[in-house]
Amino acid sequence: PFQNWQSYVLFYSALRIHQPGHITRIASGCSPEEGQALQQEFTSSIASMSPHKFHLHLSPEFRDLASENHNMSRNFAVTKYFNKPFGLLHWMEQEMKYKKGGTNMDTILILVDPDMLLLRPITGDYTNDESMSWEDPSINSKNERNKGMHGTKVEHGNPLGSRYGYGAIPFRKFDLMKIIPDKNSPVHGINQKDGAMYYPAGPPYIATARDMYDITKMWTTVAPKVHEQSQEMMAEMYSYSIAAAHLGLPHQLSKSFMVSVPNDSGRTEGWALIDQVEPSKTCHYDTESGEHKLPLVLHYCQRALLERWVITKYRLRKDFISCEAPLLEEPPADLAVKYNYGINPPKKKGEPEGEKIEYKSMQTVQHHAFMLCQEIFTFNRAATYYKEHNCFDSNGKVQANFNKTYSAFPDPAF
Image 1 (cartoon, rainbow, N blue to C red):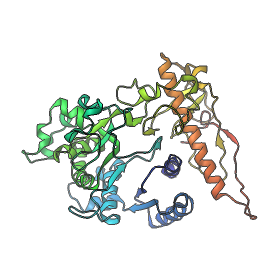
Image 2: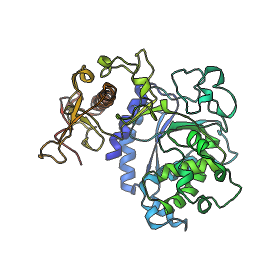
Image 3: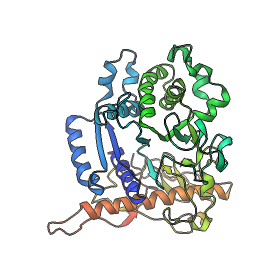
Image 4: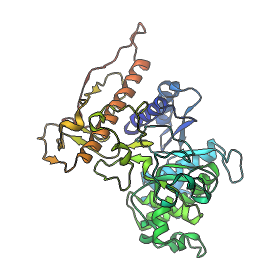
């Protein structure tokens, strides 16, 4: 249920911003009964949004896959974050029939997380997009964007990705010879500068099917070995970086692809694009008709908080996308200029609220307001769409709860 509502909202956001191409949810580890129920719900409420374009792929329980690979530890077999590489490989081979040298290898593939909202269409060519800021400073001028390996158009050998903040850690933290025992592998020659400029990638990952298939096959080989040395949450992303480096596939990375952490100063995320918006317009900024381009995605893995307005995926009730659940209360249009503080919500229902947090800059306030408003309004639009298309009485009339009375502040869902 936790990822079901996230998946619905992601598909809805893709529908709303007219994302081109096909979109597939990869769900791993369902029992036969769970898989059947998920397929039925997907067919009726998500595939129906865009017939023939929205899809579901069910991949096996990865403890079963682990038993086929003796290099995987027991702990690895239950590491949920590795559903991403193994599920992706399963989809590519079983559903799409991708193989080395196979057909459709020129197709552009985009990999995102379920807790992302699409703010504008993701493409494979940013040659003429001057709103993007690239980690490699040599291509931040228009006449350099389409040159060679470091161009900003996806081609074989030139994948793109969002710039994440872990720098060259994958090449310093691990005993790489135990992960990639080939001493001639390019991974052993990655220096600090290149490791931080071309490899700290994260979703959205964008690559040709050929490159994505090669990376994913190596990713599933590298991931268990990385996990043997570190069980932290980021091990899955470090594994991707090591796999790409071993294959000699540096990524052109942009911090403009994503926003996630409201307190981020813009060092690693696309907040510079949000800062162009007038603060008084931040809350109701229209991602479709606004004069300024926004990042590609909003990643709602962090908490946003202003006064008693709070949103986090961990506090949202898991039946939010349903006929019965109320919609979220919506913040005022002047949220970004009305408050400069947040109040920590109760840890449990009925407990007292926490301390007041004062933000030191208007920029931080604007970032929290943007995250709050984009998430709340998008969640409500998605839930409304669901109710209008799935909730009917015996006479075929819409019957659902459209009251905007739900607040995640006093009522944590966990």
